[in-house]
Length: 293
Image (cartoon, one colour):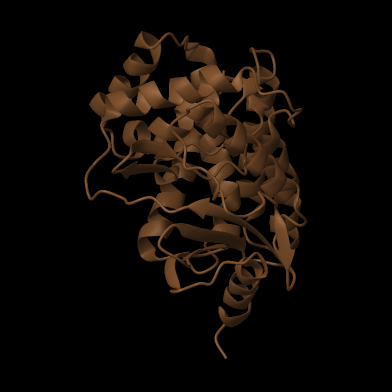
C-alpha cells in the first residue's frame, strides 16, 4: 500500500460525494501538501503531514476566505472550484480544499508584472473584512523553535540565532502599518499561466507590513542569487503601481524571512538534498553576518 493511497482516497471520495466523478489522478505536487488533478478543471489540495505543527482547519479556512474575496474582486489569483462548497472539507482525517485547474507556461515570470500583481492583491486586501492574526508566521516560527530543540534538529547556537533574529524583527515590524498579506509570497506560489500571473497558496495569510511579502518574493533573487536587477525591478514596479516601501521594514522583513525559512526547513525537508542543505547553510551564515539594527 502506498503512503498516498489514503489521501488520494480522501480527495476522490469527497468529490464523488458532491456529484463529481474523477476521471484522472495526476499528482501535481507531493510534499507536506499533496496537490492532485482529478478532472480537466478540478484540483484537490490536502495536507498529508497529519503529525505536523499545523492541525485542524483554521489555516485552510483563512485561505479559502481570502482566495474567495480576491477572486470576487478580480485579483490575479487562482480561484476555488465553483462546483464544490468552499469548505474546508475533512475526510479520513485529512483537510482538503478544491481549486480551478490552470495551465502553467514554461517561461519565467516578468519581474515588472510580479510587482504589479502583488500590489494589486495588497490593494484589494486592505478592505478584507475578516480578522487575521498579526505577524502569524513569525510568531509561529518562534514557537516552532521549541519543537526543534526537543527533537534536536538544530544545535543550541543555531536555535539562539534564529530566536534572536525573529524577536528583534518582530519588535521592529509590529510598529509599521499592518494589513492583510499573502504571507508566503515566494516565487513558488506565483504561477505563470495562460491566464497571466496568478498568486496561489494563501494559507499563511496574516496581518503584517507589505514589506514582508516583498521580502519573500525578492529574497532568493537579491540575497541567494545576487540577481539585484530582478529584485529591484519587482520593487520598482510595486512603487510605480502606487505602493510604498519602507527600507527599514524591508530590511527586517528580509532578516525575518531568512529566519522563518530556516526554522521550517527540518519540517518541510526532513531528508534534504545536498542543494537544500547548501541553501539552508547559506541562510544561516547570512543571518550571522547581517546587521539587525
